Length: 103
Ligand code: FES
View 1 (cartoon, rainbow, N blue to C red):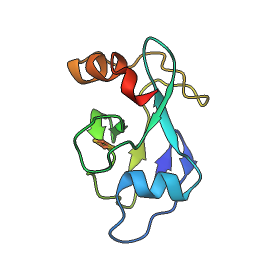
View 2: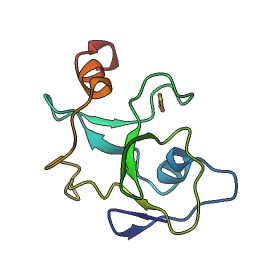
View 3: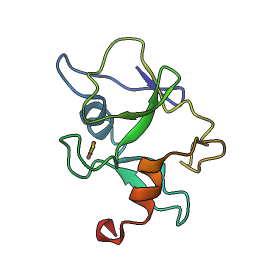
View 4: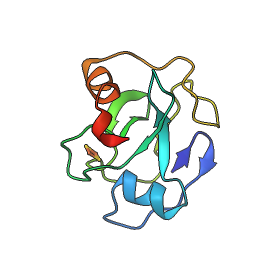
C-alpha cells in the first residue's frame, strides 16, 4: 500500500489503521477548524476519528477497512504535513471537529 505516495507495509489481516500505526504514522488527517491531528481513537468504528481516503473513496474508517496490496491511502489533496487542502465536507467531520472530548 501507499500513504500519500509513501510505501506502507501491511500484514495479512491488519486494518488500514493498524498498518499505518505500525509504519509510524499515528495521525493521517487534521481537523478542519483547529488543524489538530487525528488517527485512531475508538478503534471499533464508532468515533469516525480515523477517516481516510482509500483508493479515491473519501471518508472510509481506517479501523474497519482491511489492508490490501496496492491500496492508495490518503490521496485526497492533503499535503505530506497532513494539512487538508481539498478534503470534502461531511457531517462526521463536523461532529468530530466539535467534540472537545478528544483534545
Ligand atoms: S477509530 Fe473510531 S471509527 Fe475508527
